[in-house]
Image 1 (cartoon, rainbow, N blue to C red):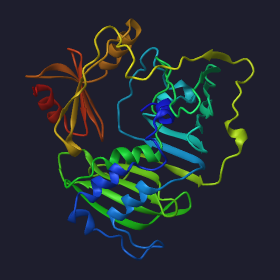
Image 2: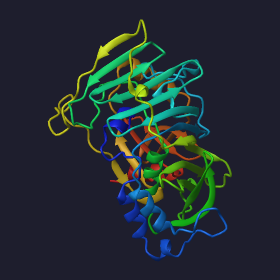
Image 3: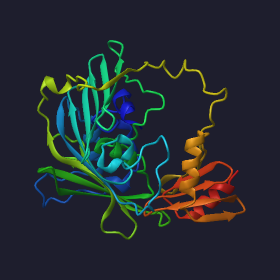
Length: 370
């Protein structure tokens, strides 16, 4: 989900959707038998109770600082032209795939939201204030403005925008909780502390040893019941390969001035076009791209998809990236392997990609699947 889609989605509340709680409760005795111990500062809660708390949580306002850290052990790869690079410390929402990043968050209802990604040498902002939506990057001092129809909680996305994924603890928790089923060992602990506040910690451990993921730990604020930290550990590792969480957190209503964005002096200002709903959108270049194939289920799911066509500059950058990766081949064809602590991916020479939190052998099997 892109940063602008965070603001657009009516389902992307500050609480995990009720479907996550239903998934846990549906696990039956597995969840009901697991209860948080009583030695912490919070009263004991079962995992099912915690997920019900999360699904019912309603926070009307909040602000805070979110820090995301990713250490997947990926090889150093060149950036693809037109997609942005390290930027020497400049802040870009497309850079949230490695290293450590800090983001400020302000929320006062679905029509008043601000995200500020802070870099050592710059900042990127997304600001929704009523019918006005702004994005701004200090890297090139460019601002884009959209006018959102009154009463519409959706947020338009600029086609070709370089803004990538901006992850909040709530979104990361939502993705992790979807994986809960009887293949997951679940436990809870009421003794966690996040941003100086007592929290429960929900631990999810895959029972399938083929998964590269060792565990996912989700901290749930003891007062507001919203997820405030998510940590993902690779199998056999004691340090998280990915974590995102609040380092400061407040439910006080932010000052109105926070949402009153004005482009800085000298900024290049562009007017974005509000796209029509997807049901009326015209497919690009004739045919609509086929949906990815899903092979397997749960923690060992593999997605196989056709890569989109690249521009000449993008193709050159992709070839440069592939040159850094080891070549692999088999009955499924040939390609290049990208392997990290949590994720494996194969980019085939015939334009496909297979990706999953699994060893490469399972990707090869998925590519051969018909």
